Image (cartoon, rainbow, N blue to C red):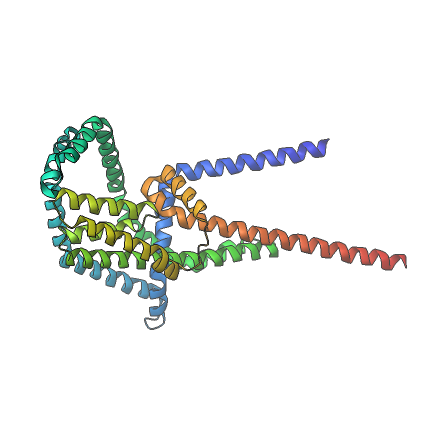
Amino acid sequence: MPLADARTARVLITVLLFALGLGFLYAARQTLIAFLFAIFFAYLMSPLVSHLEKPLRGRTRAIAVIYLLLLGLLVLLFVAIGPRIGREGARLVKTLPAMSQLSSGEIAEQLGQQHGWNLRVVNLVRDYLASHSDQIANMAQIVGLHVADVAKEAWLLVVVPLLSIFFLKDGRAFSDVLLGSVQSRPQREFLQGVLSDMNEMLAHFIRAQLTLVALTFIAYASVLGVMRMPYALVLAAVGGLLEFIPALGPLVAAITIIGVALLTGYQHWLALIIFLAIWRVIQDYVSSPRILGHSLELHPLAAIFGVMAGAEVAGLLGIFLSIPVMASLRIVFRRWRLYGEKRKAAAMKEHEIEHRREVALKK
């Protein structure tokens, strides 16, 4: 009985410590998100730093040169296309209808005149908008709150590159210290396997995600420009940025582009819908499988669960982090299962050796 009580106490203490750890992580989720983004940024810069480390005779010098080049590239981009995107964005905001026009249904008459709708369709759209004015107002308020939340995270643009310097400079030392803290050889092998798999997965995920974003921006800017879609560059920038958000981002980008086309009187909106559908198929079934490969190996249901849970915990940033976090949990689970199988095999082997020894002594 005392043994059972002691075992129960150990289980309860373990559960309590685990719950306290989860509570601490949730309370410090903003700081944790900043460090996670810093790790992602470090993975992005790491190949360039490693390539320049030998020629510049030092990792610190390589990091400094890479950051100076990155700063120069950002300044060049802002000078080249920043003003144009800003002007298009300002004009787009001015041309969008006011909330009173949406809630009252007046926008239906404007759209009917621009696109040649018959009177019946115009009346249906106007009555629908007027009867759902409260829902439209609530949705606009929610969107505004989400935009404000994203704007509050602008400090990450400064903090993340600064934190990444430490990961780029001392990342290997952090791994050595972590491995050195584990004395048991099987546990050290387990931890080393987890770190190795996560290192490969995160590096591949970050570079692949940036490649997909760049492809989306180039495709949207090129095709929308050829189709003479108003505000093509700013819409391409929005579509490229939303590509970072799994599942929901591309859908929001498509709805935004189609909505702007309808509200600005663009006549070829049907061809625009066809292009967006074709591009989504290309991205999901051609580009993503080839670029991402099988590094994540997540079931779609697990990915959807991660996106929904990430949104609940940390909003849009949580949605972006959900896929790599779920993939990391999968790596830990797989390595833990292998670790358990090795322990079981070692125990069976030890039991077999002990049995043979007992048989030999009896003879």
